[in-house]
Image 1 (cartoon, rainbow over the protein chains, first blue to last red):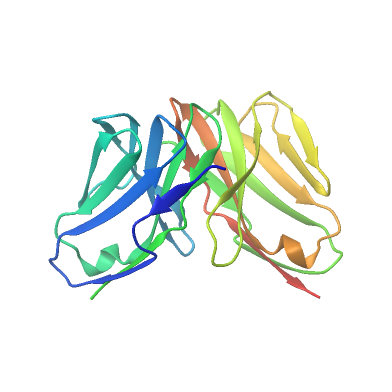
Image 2: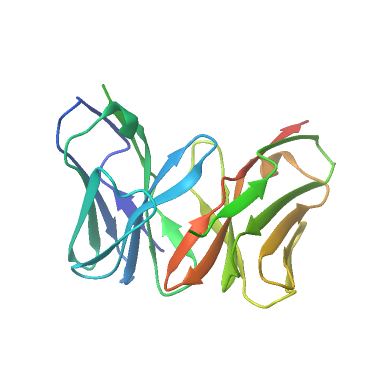
Length: 111
Length: 110
């Protein structure tokens, strides 16, 4: 059974902290994605990766960076967390141009 | 840049009524995907349409892809309480990246 896991379901951080969100998939998928979900705005793509050490900016990359050192792991980094980064963060993976499998999400609150 | 618009934002129906959500892209799409997100859950893939004018059915759900491959719809016949959730369309135009619509949240009066 396909599985995408995220390191935390809930996270509370202070403004200015460096935040790491981890995502692991066990399906040997080449593509991995990070989205944030906010009410009324749907899912907005932050970054995606189509191979190890490869990354591309999505629609809202400002304030974020990513790392993909291994095929199964894709990390999202908030270099200096701000209150406007309070959101639900969803990781997904896919094989080619087909369905994306989502993790359970991390609800991040920045105070 | 490419945009995918989805309407309506909310729909509240009586159980047994039909429901439709519409998706429009500013550019021609290579494919369209539909996802469902239950309250408190994560998006789950429902279906992908690839061909111009394609129509696919899953039980009470009917999915259509427009002739120009710029719009799509999801129609649910005779809604049930299990249909509650937010339905997202997602349009693909290049590589493996897709753009999600803002979603339609469906709520149902029993």
